[in-house]
Length: 254
Image (cartoon, rainbow, N blue to C red; front, side, top):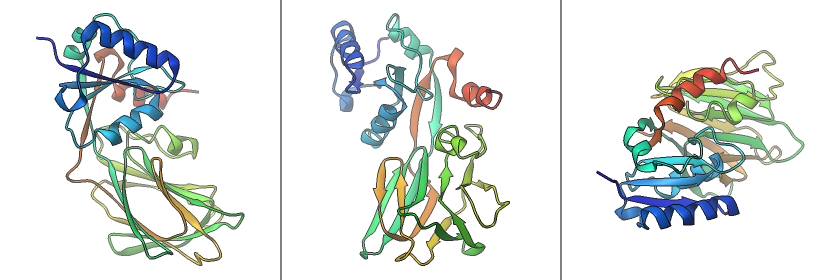
């Protein structure tokens, strides 16, 4: 039985042309009425798609027509219905970020890859780390830090020398960016049910921003991060190109 497919594409002309061709072959369907959303582009566009349609409950099957495609299947338009029928599911649980800014504003956002804290000026950030209400680091002096999901552990987290996490491990990676003190602290692997609070010390002199995927809040005072217990999204992958296998293989790449 053929599934109803909704096609969405990045602004890259190659992706737009592919979208028009697939719509001509399979028909056009609105995402709200579709069984599966097919995303054409790179990882950045996949993240946009997950955010845009996260409340629809629709699984997403991506095909790479962009610069980076870790979350995408290979581009192959033939037998698309059969591929989707055979696809294996990967369930992603996003992070929930709550931020208090110097302005007094409270901002909430969702991250499928990571929450990042970054210094805004030449001054290093000074951050206190509190886990489940208990202080773990009184002062981390650094350029910033990341809290990453397993799906995001091969992205910015890996570039900052953080660990790669298996997709189904229910763990999170906390990784410093260019830590100065404690000099030998390289981060932590944390259970996914933990609540993390990061307080910005001397925030007027040493301003810090917090970003959940692409949603940035500047001049923050503190940020709380936890894994969502109510939100999930489903990605579909070809059996021969599963996300779990790519995460495993990435650990042996050189």
